[in-house]
Amino acid sequence: MSVSGIQQTQLYCLADPTYYETPARLPDEETRYPLDSAPPPEGRRRVRNGLWTSLLPEGRELAEQGWKIHVSTVPEEAEATLRDTARICLAHGVPFKFLRSEQALLLMSDKYMARSGAGKFLTLYPPDETVFLRVLDELVPALAGRRGPYILSDLRIGDAPVYVRYGAFVARWCTDADGERVPALRHPSGELVPDERGVVFRVPPWVTVPEPLRPHLAARAAAGDTTFPYTVTESLQFSNAGGIYRARHRETGRQVVLREARPHSGLDAVGHDAVTRLHREHRALTALAGLDCVPEVHGVRSVWEHHFLIEEHIEGSTLLEEIVARFALLHGSGTDAELATYTAWVDSVTERLAQALAAIHARGFRFGDLHPTNVIIRPDGRLVLVDFEYATDLDDQDTPVAGAPGLQAPTGTPGAESDAYALWATWLYMLMPIMEMAGHDRAKAVTLERWARRRYRLAADAGPIRPAALRAAEDRLGGER
Image (cartoon, rainbow, N blue to C red; front, side, top):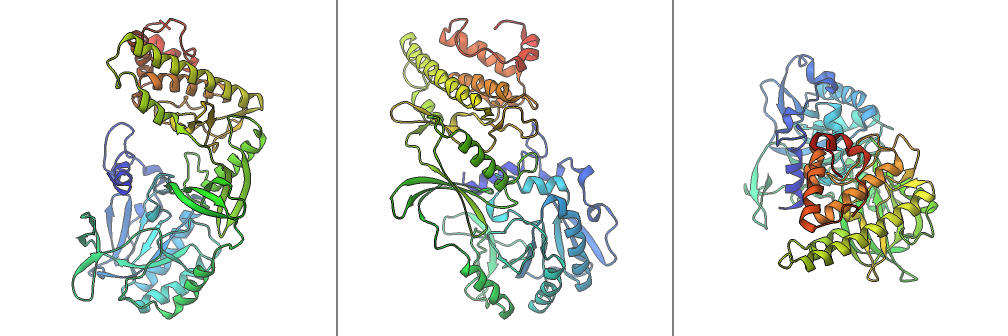
């Protein structure tokens, strides 16, 4: 499945924590914006589609395509931004849609939502270019100074969170070069062609950019920093929060990793954005400097409006890749000798992970995000932990822990104890890599541990001590270790 397909599928996992459900059934009634629940303004009809609410003029259909306006926001300013934008739309007879609730806004601003749609809180559909430019003239000063994520697919207008692009207003579909069904525009010939909604502002070749937009195009072209000394050689990962890149210093040739953070983007469960987490990571890596299990940090740099953490590039494989390559119940015939070899490797990795966490704790920090993808095993066998976005003081009560499904400690578990939980869960994952079910019911983790001990013929004291947070689940199943 493509990345966009995965992100679309994820939307259907949000309305209910257990079942696959349509986003429209998200239980967000308590955070709905007044414009969603109050009677529609005179002359408007309300149409709901998923997490979006549209207010459309009575008796008039949307134009097929044209210049559309997007407005982004942050949760603290969303209600005021919606009110001020709606007032202008109603005055000019412009159809528009908006995310219906604060909860919907937070979900669509999540780190793992599609980058191309990230930040879009309102979409305006001016019926023609004249109205489009007139609305911009009023909207930009009305929202000047407001905050919001940069919408990568669009052109920003002025110093407001107002963006524009030429695109489809109504659903039309065609097949792209890869044979996928994608949204479409109508070419002047009448043929339907893909409506490209990527992460770069593009204008269809037959469309002329209105003259008032040209200064903003020039400002976009001039953005950048020619003094940034690194050249990107490979893109490793993308998310709504930003990218992760391998790069080379232009003068020294030093290989580094650049971790990008986009302001107001990639919100987490407590509303922290990517920039907040990046600077938290920089603080932790600086405090942990010199530890063999921590990447060396080379600083933080801002390029245009994005922030970049520059850190050591670690050669090696992730622990997840090593598990896949070695897993004893998949490779070989499962003889006692094969199982013993694998469990010896698991014990060795677990011991080195425990030592790494102890070294971090000794500096007064917790890691907060231990799982197999965040562990790199160097060619010589040494372990390095990566992704310190949630690393913070051991006594920090406000920063949540992160982690993979089934490997996270319960909410509120204190610093060192939350890392100990993740260490035990990672040990069990290496033996039974189906821990996701423990995210739904922690008793499943206890069941998996008991099964693993029998299948691998482990000694009673093998592995880390089961976390105290699982005591209730253990009691439900009957109290053996």
